[in-house]
Length: 90
Image (tube, rainbow, N blue to C red; front, side):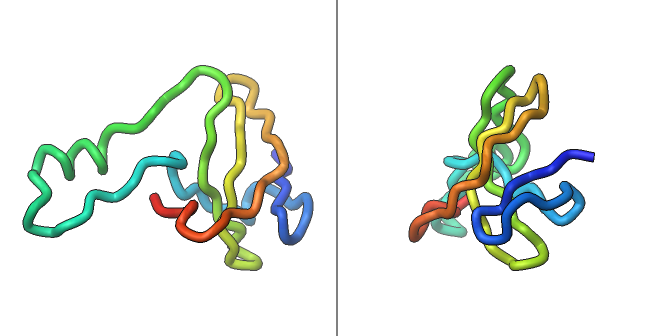
């Protein structure tokens, strides 16, 4: 089992966390103004880097969102970092 570190609760088992997506994948604004192609890109295409990725996670126990850097090859994760206002927008 993998251990992730919540910036609010400390190290906890991975099953207490929910993946929120790539940090920086901002939802398109304007319901009618967004093309079907843009929505498709937002929903379907993700960064898939080999190595370090910056991601948004939620600790389901405390309900807080935070950023975490995780190596997609080794699965090693750095301790989570609390987010400022609007940094969790995904």
